[in-house]
Image 1 (cartoon, helix red, strand yellow):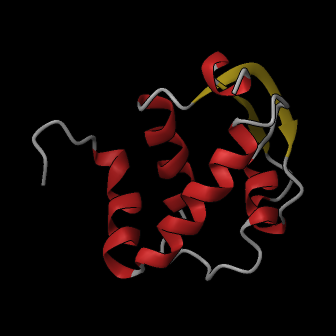
Image 2 (cartoon, rainbow, N blue to C red; image 1 turned 45 degrees about the vertical axis):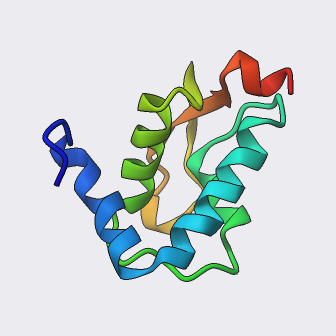
Image 3 (cartoon, rainbow, N blue to C red; image 1 turned 90 degrees about the vertical axis):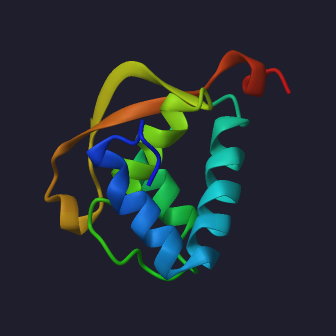
Length: 105
């Protein structure tokens, strides 16, 4: 395990170890959203991932988004929305956008 890994990254790296196909699909979906120039939420990501297997850990998507932010792919817009995914029970979720370099691509 890398020395600089944050405990919040464990769910994401565990998912990669269990199901590499999920990570490949997740990378494609996030790249699509981030390069669209439009704000998006984890609900939008889940809709794009509808045909992919469900992650094995409930924190995987949050961990994946955290890594994408740390890697400079996405950034928060400063806004929140009410989740539409049933498992989130209407909680507020962060809205994201691709970093300017991706939006210009």
